[in-house]
Amino acid sequence: MLPKDPQKVLEYRQAISKRMMGNKNPVGAKRTKEHKAIISRLKKGIKMPQEIKDKVSKSRRGKCLGSDNPAWSGGKPRCIDCGDEILGYMADRCSKCYHKHNTGENNPAWKGGVTSENHSIRNSIEIHLWREAVFSRDNWTCLKCGSRGVTLHCHHIKNFAEYTELRFAIDNGTTFCKDCHMDFHNKYGRKNNNIKQINEYLYDDRIKPYNNSNSQTGSRLAEVKR
Figure (cartoon, rainbow, N blue to C red):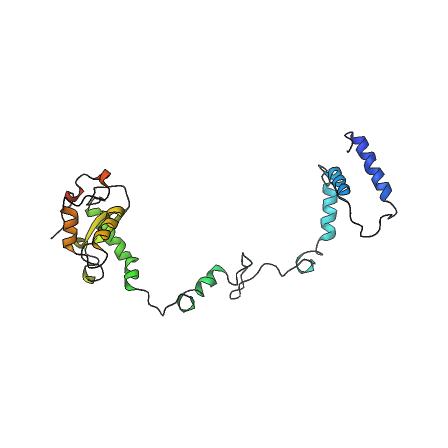
């Protein structure tokens, strides 16, 4: 055990230093765990003076940096296309160049440019404006269960795939909440949807709203053109 008296600690350190003078220990001898523990305890809480830090920094300046450092491995990787530094070490390209080289024909999932017209239209500004217009007309309310303040879906009364000329017609849209929209397609499928199905789903009292807790005769809230 190390003494708690600072004076005795100093004497102890001096005694260790005296024993090690003259290179009595063979070159390359490994320190024992006990020896390492003693050194660690003696150095604990001791801060290197700023003067010593400056001297060490000055002596190493320009000697151990970059390619002069024995542990130098080439620095941060650079993009093989533009030469910019890459944050990670596993990539070959920066994010911008990766995007350029991973779209279109360069993408492993490329199928010859067959992005469906359906997908393109459903993500266009026109379809977003059409939804907003239908929602606004229906007062942002599900026409089946009467829910408001929930996720709303805009449903094409006449099928989207077959009636291409009516894709952006406001009269061809009706507002459902997410649950009622899924319920409609579960009952009638996703192909060949038509006005007859909408009328039956909205006005037939035998078909209850999917979300009964919010239902207040929602099928009477709007009038679907026949």
